[in-house]
Length: 339
Ligand SMILES: [Zn+2]
Image (cartoon, rainbow, N blue to C red):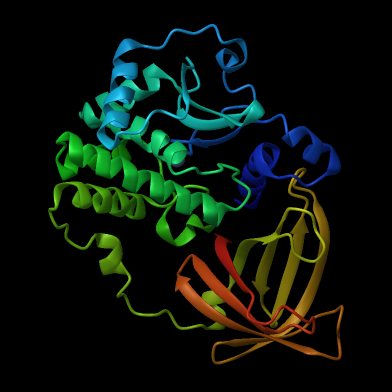
């Protein structure tokens, strides 16, 4: 499982993370984008049509785009381009900061067919248009911001579909045709979980139609009982990402393993290669929900952090004092990668 995460990191790193100087330089030529499905990673040569301008859009897609923009009375601020075989639809900002929407018609039609709703194509296009009209920068460097922008684009799409006469179920149908991370482990994904996306679409749909929507299953699940913090619940390996911390340029991944004998084993990974760059162990004790650690790089000091179980697979660590100024109150979410 750890290996799988590293491979994922490698892929994400190659696409988004400016870790080395070489990468930072290359990054300027790469497009910035939101891709609708997190399952497919279009490469930086996302579609040769973007570069060569020799394209013909599909009439029905063009009509759908015109219908969407005419609802809000705004002129498109983007160029529409067909990209066969990317198995995705995406909003892009590319060279000279021009905005594009690229789409694979087979991908759009495939989702519509899967979920038996012709509204899905419109929803996906409206979502991508929502990114551009909201002026999203689509930089993908901060996953929390990216998830927030996804929800804004979803709300916009919900509004458009509501105005166009789609039912609530039709507006959210496309969400059943793509994969999503689970809500409790979405922290390291640039796409929000399904429940939050549906909630955002329904919010927009409700604004357009004036009809109220009921609380979703996500809101209900938030009322579940808290999980106590105990050595037994912590046992196993947990994964997190350090974002520009400790002088690193970019994201660095880290796992902690709670072992027998009150030991925490730390492993730091290179985000590009997945190779372990640093490894050490510390002794720990738990006082209620406070984790007290003797870190090897500061043996005369007891580091303290508050632990909170967000679910059985996600924990939130809030640093109380780790001996380094400026870290007080810093929150880190860890997700479980091994029991
Ligand atoms: Zn998006």
